[in-house]
Length: 80
Image (cartoon, rainbow, N blue to C red; front, side, top):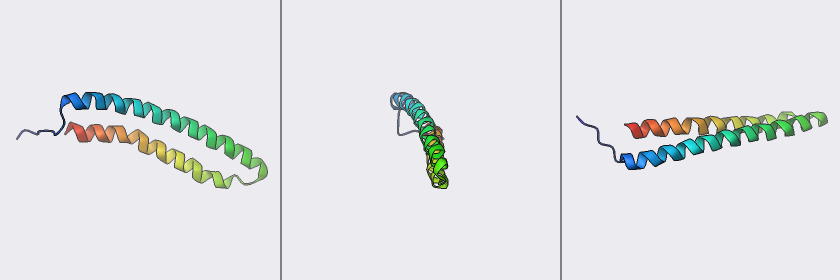
């Protein structure tokens, strides 16, 4: 039995290129997000309330994980 995909090679080529660019943009945004949250956390530690920034750091790291796994998941689903 032959598997027929709903999308052709003319769609998956540009989609792979877009997914590659998005993966790099997510990586850059994640690094900047961690730097910003880390800077804010370091400044807050001087005033004694550094605990509230841990949820922001967890949010940024969670977004990085979702962004990093989105490309391979889409590639797997389109490969059939």
